[in-house]
Length: 343
Ligand code: F6P
Image 1 (cartoon, helix red, strand yellow):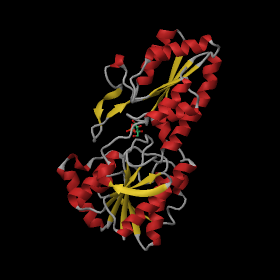
Image 2 (cartoon, protein in one colour):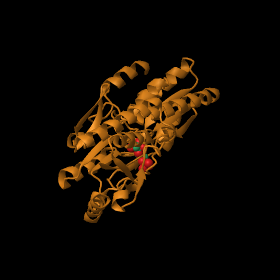
Image 3 (tube, helix red, strand yellow):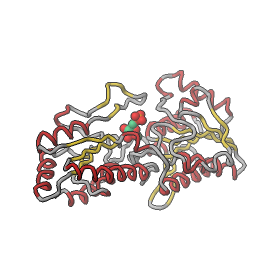
């Protein structure tokens, strides 16, 4: 069997562990693997490299993706998808394994359901916002990056008696913010799933100061909608090929507001792409490896149109059609528990 693999959308730590596992599992069954470069663009432009078990054996510790990534949407026009179909034919791949988030997997689903292509999906994103899987790899590394950054910011915040506002990624889901907020004992955090109560936040920061805690830590999701900001705060008016806005900048507004309302000197740090960079955690390496092994096995069993998924401790699979199109926002109980500390 010849498998073509690709990584699409925002990169995340653990992608190389998946690639290594797909290549090895396929090789163990006599198969060969090629990697299409830069997501779906690699199929539009027929750009691929050969992947061998030997050549990919030590990539597990590397962040990013050796295949490169992009947010190319081949369904944006008929020409794009025509080229993808031509590449699949000319390269002789029997199965396509797409490693990506909702957009990349949505393309894999349409290729399978509308064009009969043998696709299998592997879910990834630091945002942890995909339905049909309990955890996405990349998330664990990302929250540890935020945790380490906040631990460092705490010492300088304390020295200068400041409030430090940290803006996190995660699009419209508060997973990164909530998990990093709980793990760093942040004074308050704002997530996209809830209407921000800015009055309460400012009162809390003032009360804590009066009670002797002379600094504050506030974590803000990039996707929080502020009543004063008239919708999401975005970097510019540009949309990506899948129609998503580029979020970013809400932390600045929250910091200004805190300083104005509380009189406490406040600084902001936007962690941005640091959250996606660097070596994957052990958890993400193992989860990525397991998903890659199971995706290649599915291909050899001829079970296409599926996405591998983590349920509890087991790797299972779900129909791609059921897995895409629905965002998994932060489960409310995590915030209910966190609120015990917002007093
Ligand atoms: O989906 C992953 C993610 O990192 C989001 O958290 C963030 O909003 C977005 O990608 C940033 O995308 P880009 O790398 O295109 O700026």
